[in-house]
Length: 244
Image (cartoon, rainbow, N blue to C red; front, side, top):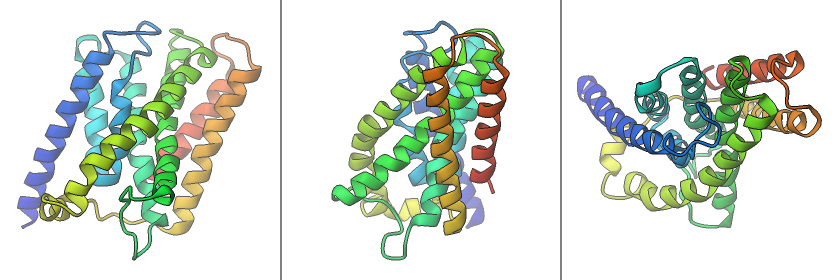
C-alpha cells in the first residue's frame, strides 16, 4: 500500500510539474524585466497545488520552475524555485492549523469560504515576490523596489482571480467527486497547530507589508542592506515556519 501511495504521488507530482513548467516556459517569452520577471501565468497554480496536494504540489512548483528555466539556468532560478515552493506550501500549512473537523478542506461554496481562499491566495503571492526581488537585487539585475511590486501585484491578481476560478472548477473532483478515492490515497496528512498557522499567517503578511513599505519609501538602488537583509530574514522565516 505504501509503495502504491508513493508511486501515485510521483505520478501526480510529475504531471503537476509538467503543467507548471509549461506555463513557466510560456511566461518567459514575455519578459517585463529581462532575466527576472515575465508574464508569470504559473501564479495561478500554487494555491491549488498546495491546498490539494501539500508537499507534492509545492515540490512540483519548485521543480517546474527549474525545468521551465532549463534553457537559461542561473542563480535567479534558485530564488524563483524557492518562491514557487513557498507559494504552494505556505497557504497549505496555514490552512492545516486553521481548519476544523466540520470543514477539513476548502470548497468554494459561499462568500465566507471565498474570503478564506482569497486570504490564503494573497499569502501564496508573498514568497515569490520576496525571493525573486531579493535575488534580482543581489545579482544586480533589478533593484528590489522595482521588482517586488511587479511580482507581488501579478501574483496576487493571478492567484486570487485565476487561481480561484481553477480551484472552484477542479477541487470538487478531488474533494467530493470522481477522483476523491484517488485523492485520499495521495493527500498530504501533515498537520499543524493553530498557533503555528497563525504565526505563519502573521509573518507572511508582515513580510508583504514590509516589502510594500520599502517600495514606497526607498529609492531604486542596488544592494541597500536594510532592504536585502530585512526581506531575506523575513523570507527565510516564512519558509522555516512553513516547514516546521
